[in-house]
Image (cartoon, rainbow, N blue to C red):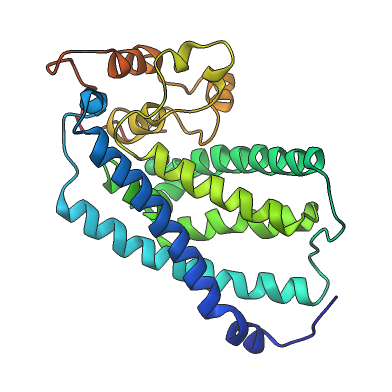
Length: 274
Ligand SMILES: [Zn+2]
Ligand SMILES: [Zn+2]
């Protein structure tokens, strides 16, 4: 039911809760993944560290500062979105749904976001957009879970924009949205974890290879800007010929039950062109 309010009233209603929710989402997911990586680096899985280079303290503070800025962008942009819900321009789906429909909504939302991410990411790698939108994210050569929200303001806006566009097209049950948001931040932190978290054989498995890995996105930061633009899945990269030719070999090398001096991927400064 519509609750007519002004933009200002909407802002007063949601700013604190919205900021807290998004910040908590980032802090919880990044702490979980960073903690897991910290633990694994004290086991035999230490050899799964993808790059020889270590993220620096400067990386970490830049990324956490940027994450706070990103959450502020999300909070500001949530105000007109909630206002649009309250005035009936956007809709959620309020009827009870079964498990099958829940899964269907969730899958559709993840697939749509994957497509949004791939194409907006490729667009942000073009010359006119790169500097303003995406260069900041690529200041990180060696990602960690804390890199997940390391966006310049325009890129954060592009990331958020998926939500109102999706809601304009598909009225979605609220529990589906919250599950999607949880999956999104977890996959984001996993993609930036810096240590491969997926089981051996994943990148060449006939089914699992379609789901992205940590190595996949790590290579986009540390090996080549011109490859591996995808997020949850690899099919856009495979379909468009943008998957790095050494992706599977690198994944297999990183996940091999290797001795301590196994080779790592290069951490040479990547190519800059799309
Ligand atoms: Zn990244
Ligand atoms: Zn990029």
